[in-house]
Length: 384
Image (cartoon, rainbow, N blue to C red; front, side):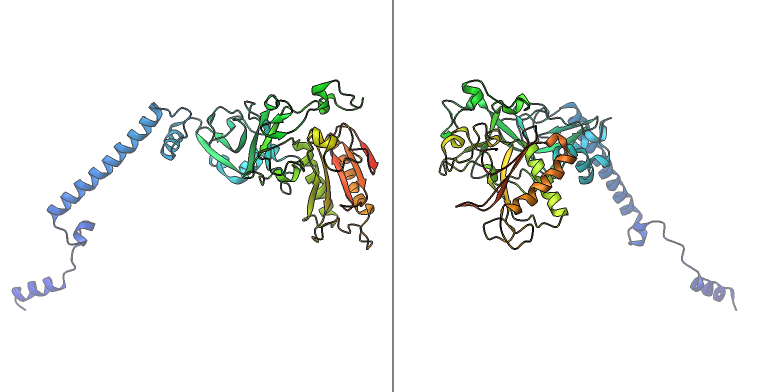
């Protein structure tokens, strides 16, 4: 074989050298490669400069009380020494942080406060605060003006809404003039017109006139107070065409009602059809509205910590046969009373009244439950 033939065969069998870069693999010339590389580097530098400028600008120009943009929150969090940990931002952690808000039952869905009062609970750890992002006072950690608001937890510069929960800010009692708030007639509490002859064993504060009223409109009447109860469930049964209406509710009694329902469910009772027959009664209605038979002059219904309830899960309009004796009687109310006794034994801070009532014209058996601050039990009229 000649030298020329040998060289030709070596050229044919030679393995190509690996390409130097991805640009060569794409068939790009060295000159074009240099242009593309310079352009890519320029874009990376511009992005870095832009992001750095954004962070510096957001830190140098705080947004005050206005709602921060997503960019602002991210920028602040990246440079803040108090930046939140991921654990604070999970729904599970929020449930733990706000457990106190949801009551002993764990089923409360609202907190009631006077406007301007601090938004604070013992279970919120250092570094976290409650806030109302949509209010004019966002960031001030106080209850905003009267209305229904969404709460959030703020940790550092991050804000996480509390799901399925509302803050209800109330109108002050001073808004009631001549017994009315707006067009809605409420009347006057005994403590506003003279001394109160409250029971000696009663906590004095439980018989003081309420500090204010929840404004209930046709639009917000279905706001949940707890898993089973809404605002409209507790409205006084009068002035049907007057809106807004005004309501007094003590959440400790809503919590107590939920505990009673939980106990009943644990004992095999279907609680899906719980109904509030009578919740809050304005003083004027308690005195002269509807059927006044058996109403106490200092009824706990006027103070927002009482409810007459029955369970109608089969939907026939009256109490269910809770004791399974084939009849609907006051004994079915006593099944609920037994649950009430168990709840008060486990939670003496919720002690109060329990009265069972038989069926009468217009309604079936029911039970009165309140949290007046001392134990009371009765059958029939006169106790609630």
